[in-house]
Image: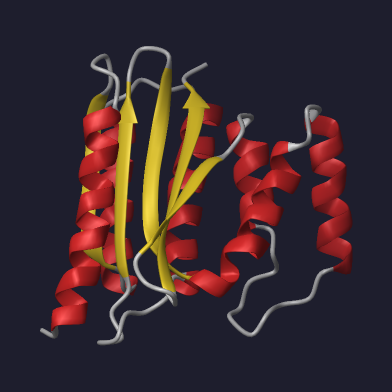
Amino acid sequence: MSAEHSHTALQILNALHAKKHNIASDYSVLIEYNGTLNPEVISTLESQIEQVLNTQQLVKTQYKKLFFICIETLQNMFIHGACDADQKKHNYFMLTGNAIQFQMHVGNLMETAQIEKTKFRIDEVNAFDNPDKLKAFYLDHLDKNQISEKGGAGLGFITIGMKSANPIKYSFNAINSNLSVFNMEVSVSRS
């Protein structure tokens, strides 16, 4: 493992620990993962998420929304996350919950050059205060959008915003001039 790889992994781990430290005392950590993502890890996490959600006594619509958002964020981290010098994609994923809501805390490496584009997309989604207008924006975007070279259609943040019905919180922590840690928090009501 190179020194840069160790430093990058440490930055991701530090971001996760900072999130855990800032979680309100009435939240329980339901699932936590820190490491590199690949299809096998995502499949394992998907099974763990299903098991945890099955213990939460959710109505079917909330179960589906929460499960979808979890899987969407994992896939987005895998597809869009940047690699370190050793071609590793470091990520963290944490699902917490209390009696009122769930919170998903995720983080991945991002090329610093992508920060402004990401901010714009999330801020664009967060600007909608009407679910019907956000849905219309989604449908319009779906009609006009093409698949990117990474296989996405640019709908991830829009669908997360629609399904969560809450603003997407985010921050960036620079690692060096080329890489940053992208941190995202999504809240989903239990009811």
